Image 1 (cartoon, helix red, strand yellow):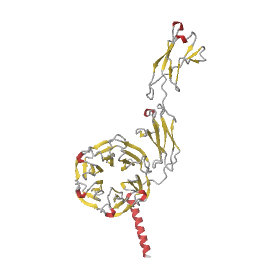
Image 2 (image 1 turned 30 degrees about the horizontal axis):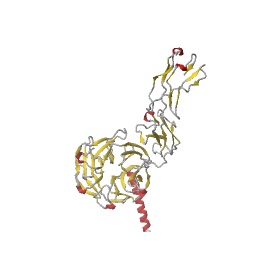
Image 3 (image 1 turned 180 degrees about the horizontal axis):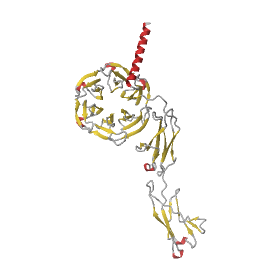
Image 4 (image 1 turned 45 degrees about the vertical axis):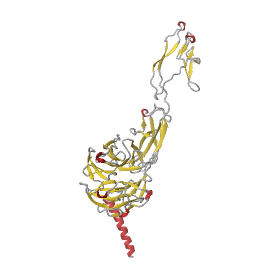
Length: 484
């Protein structure tokens, strides 16, 4: 009897703690975990750790390395080797678009949004920090110049309570501070190897205002004074709760510390945010296919209704030329709630057209031979559904008709007048091709029935191109004949 009562009390305490946790948060949250060796972003219930599913994988699959929730409530994810920045719908997990790719990204490693709403990324190979306006989608700019203050192989970065930028550097195992407005170097906030720090990865200011560092090689979480950078303590020592080669960490909405555990443990550990004491293995080994947790991000819990269904997509005209505007037609998506909207993204030869987000692509963007596709993602304002696409190949445009007339205006065969074609004006070919002319001559005695004169007329391929004669001799012309 006593055993049953104990079980009841324990169950009650667990249920009560979950209710208190959710009440303390004010709303429920999900925890997103980047599974590095999959590679895929996995979603877990932020209160219970229950696996809820995975995000869509862009094609081709790249090695994500950094992710951050934007002020616009989209999830931004960067890839290391492909130099790409993706925008995800945080509720459905669908990829919305490739926001940017290319220079000045140089193996972007980690990222964070600043108090100005801009995205800051550490460039591992560039030894610098770039920033990017995800709303304007303008070209990223270098914020911290290469090697400033001795910056070498930057890793995690965060803004402090003072509004300045703090960057962890792997090579010298130190934390550098930069002016949050200008990017200018201020000082070495935490000196090399202070407190045994080795290969710092994630850095974050905790609820108490102190700086916490995920020290990968020394396998500990270190705590430093948030004002002076002075070492305070080994907040979570090596081996605590199974801590091994910590890759990333984050303070949760419950103010506890969550750590992506490395060393083939494939798990996420939770520690008391005030004492550093081990609480539990929040996400056990391999749950949901987790294979090396490498990044963590808390986001508002996704709605649990069904997302919109996949649309039917087509492009008109079906056989376009470079003179045609393209219209993307999307129909057929079903929604459970809200208002249906379609999100459009255009790609030409595999590259995103960044500045076109509507259903029409102007002919100004295309040329003969281009392969154009339109990707359509349905949304109900909260969730996005599975996307669908259609594609066309741009064909050859017809050359413009020239302005011309025949000379002379009043020919006289008795005076030896022949006929000649005079080109008054010719617009260039839409595809930039050289324009060739085929001259065909027709003769009539009454202006109604016309006879083609093959001896002076040209032909189009196949089998052989022949231009024909732009001028014909008076020998072909008789008084009273009509020619065209």
